[in-house]
Structure formats: C-alpha cells, structure tokens
Length: 174
Ligand code: SF4
Ligand code: SF4
Ligand code: SF4
Image 1 (cartoon, rainbow, N blue to C red):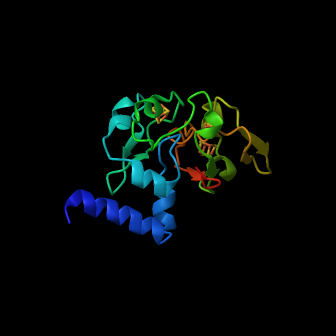
Image 2 (spheres, rainbow, N blue to C red):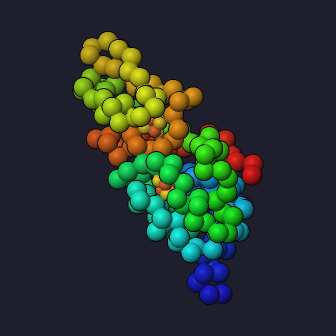
C-alpha cells in the first residue's frame, strides 16, 4: 500500500469507526459535502489551500484540507468553492447558510465569567452574535445567539484564553 492509499484508508477507517474526536477536530472547508463523500471526492490537490486568502485551510493528519482558526476566520469569500473541481466542495457561493452548520462554544476558561473585563470576541463579531449578561461580583456571561452565529471563527483567534471552539451542529446530508 503506497502512502497516499494508506492516508485515505486511515481517514475512511476513522470515519467508519465513528471516531468522534477525529471528526470534531477536522472542520472541513465551507460548502464541503458530507464527510464520507468528501473523503471520496477530495483528491488532496491543495487548490483550496492556495485559494484561501485568509490562510485558514491547512491539512489534517491524513493530508485532507481542514480549517485552522488560530490566526483568522472564514470570510465566506467562496474562493475555495470556486476552485474545487472534484465536487468535494459544492453549492452556491451566494448561499452562505448552506456553507456549513457550525457554531461556536465558549468554555469556562473565559476571562469574563471570572470577573476580568474582556469583550474581545464580541468586538470582533460582525454578526453581533455574542452578547454579555451581567452577573454578580463584576462577572459577565458571554452568550451566543445561535441564529446569528455563522461559525466564521473570527472570534477564536482574539480570545486570550483559547476559550472558544467551533462545532458542527448537525451533520450535512448532502
Ligand atoms: S470561503 Fe474564503 S476565507 Fe473561507 S475557507 Fe474558503 S477561501 Fe478561505
Ligand atoms: S474573548 Fe475569550 S475570554 Fe474574552 S470574553 Fe470572549 S470568550 Fe471570554
Ligand atoms: S463564529 Fe463568527 S459569527 Fe459566530 S460568534 Fe464568532 S465571530 Fe460571531
């Protein structure tokens, strides 16, 4: 078995085993088809990596494209979608709601809930999807409006305690 075949087999095996950790870690580019189809169609050409001006598309352990929000977020420019010729990314660039089903979660390492003033995530959210509710003792609770959050990830890199992560809400059927 050559290394490319080995890579593909590992990814498919992980998915078939229902390897949740692997699935959560590997956020595919927007407009990706469902995971089994994605692994079948993506030929690891790296065209989407080159097309992404935000440089948020990187490789997973098996060489498939996945997103890294540690420096920036997705602008939904759809350059990755336009360049993909295999059908691994599919849809209308004007239809951002179809891009993916991701929203963020905020863990209890958030400074704000510990009484330290911080609004970085809310300040960087164009959708105004994070609101802060006053608690006692100078603490505030960041709350996500799940209807407004596009899962763009722009709030992730600016969080000083890495309290924000991104998750799939429901699996894509396509
Ligand atoms: S939509 Fe644009 S910013 Fe988002 S991953 Fe694709 S190329 Fe990058
Ligand atoms: S940026 Fe991070 S630490 Fe600051 S309020 Fe948001 S989640 Fe909390
Ligand atoms: S992922 Fe994007 S839309 Fe959602 S809260 Fe963060 S910055 Fe706002």
